[in-house]
Length: 297
Image 1 (cartoon, rainbow, N blue to C red):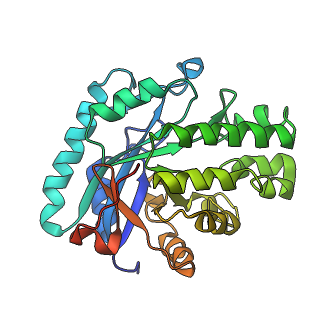
Image 2 (image 1 turned 180 degrees about the horizontal axis):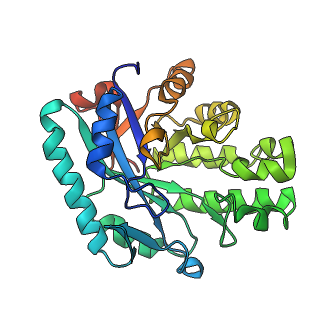
C-alpha cells in the first residue's frame, strides 16, 4: 500500500506519441487507487527542426498532429479541465504540465507555447545531443559509439547549462539521462562525468529557484540508482537546490507511481520534501494548502 500524500509529477498520457493509448481520466482513476493525492501530466514537446519527421508530434485521438498546430494543446487543456472538475470533490489534484526536450536556438518557440497556455509545471529535459536521441535504445548507439567520453561530457553539460540559463523551466528532468544507455558503451566511467561540470549548473539552478527531478524510471530499466544518482542529489543539495519533484516518467498505466516511496525516502535522508506546482509557482507538498509559494527568479 502506497503511503499517503504521494504525488507523481512526470506522467505521459496518450498525447505523447511514445505513450500507451491511456487517457487522462484513466490515469486519474489509477492514481487514486494507488493512494496518490496529486498528478501532473507532462506530455512530450519536441521541436528540433532536424527531427521534425520523427519527434515533433502530439497524438490526438490516435492520430499524429504537428506540435506547432496548437489545436492539440487546446484539447489537452480541455481534457485536464474536465478531470480537475470530475475529481475535485475527491480532493484529488490534477495539474497541467509539459516535458520539453530542450534544443538550443528554439527558445522563442518554446517561450511562445509556454506563455500561451496556463501551465502549472514546465519540465525541461535533454533528450537529444547532436540531434540524436540519447534517450532511445534504438538511436543512442549512433551517438555513443562515435563519441569519446570527454565529448559526451562536453556535449551534455554544455547543453544542460544553456537550458538552465534560459530560465524557461520549473524543474530539470532525469539530469543524468546519459547514464541510461551510455553505460553500455562506456561502463562505469560514465557514472562520474558530472564531477566538476554539474556543480556550477546546480548553483545557477539554486539562484533561479529551479527544481530538480527525482525520476524513478531508471529502476525499471535495470539501473541501480534513480535519475539522478545519490551522489548528484548530494551535489545539488550542497549547491543550494531546494526544490525537488518526484516523477515515475510513466508511459503506461502500469508504470504510474513506481518507486515513489523510495524516491521520497531519498529526499528525507537530506531533510528535503517533494514540491508541487500551481501556475508555475512551487510549494512544498505538505504546506501547499497554506499558500507557501516560491516564485522562480
